Length: 325
Image (cartoon, rainbow, N blue to C red; front, side, top):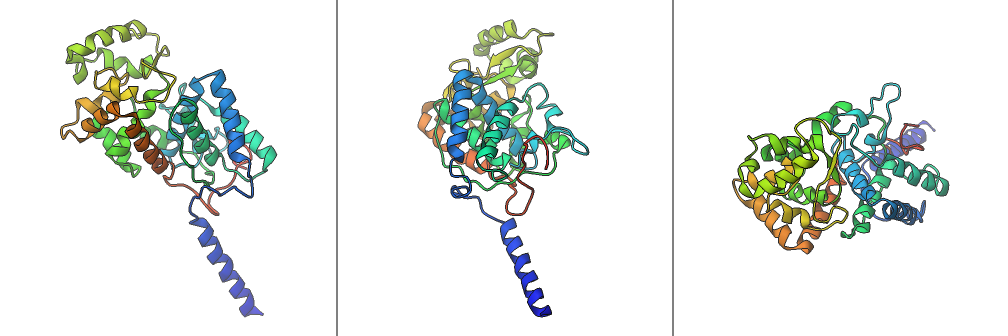
């Protein structure tokens, strides 16, 4: 009898270890929540049609989540007890949006499939649908992520790249996440949608130490930016990251870069600070071919969506994305 109990215990442990290293798969919820993707897509479509900026917000939310602790929905947690929310970190405060949309999707999913689908998977699906709904490529999302039990305020301040980073700093930042320079250039293309606050691009306009400020072709663009963002004040005034087609997912972002018309300094360094030429060549290639950019972006965002994911018995499935169970 004792031997049988020991054997059963071993089997439970082995099964738990197998579950804890579970691989993400596209059909993870096929039986437990078959309407998941339809629910997410319907709500995203209604929100994006009403307010196109929602698409950029949800795509950015996915990025900011994955760069801190991995793609585990830690960015969604509110401060509570020992948890200090990542929402108050410098890169997120008064800037990151879309939480209410995730709340609405989660409520609908909970009604259909209680305590089944993770917030981390919902964020990933919403990011994919954001791209598709604004004219970008689609891709199959592998699922099975679980939600973290913690957040990292310090991690958000440390690992989310800031608008004034040099190219070397950006490369090092992405390398920490297991992403290479190809991923850096492709994922930067997410800036083909959305807006940035004056405080994020003011230095680009007025700091003469930035290389782009010496380029004659930058001067007219600089003048237009200074009318939006003065040397002081108006910190929260918004400008589009892509002045050509700010509400659509296309390759105009890269066309802007080759003209020194990227809004953020961290965008323009992809061209101005590349000594070897490989990164600059890729920018030109994406500017020349939307199809090539779309293909590369899909490969890189799938790779990003797999950073340090929790699976199996790790973490939990939150009932409310803002709080642990």
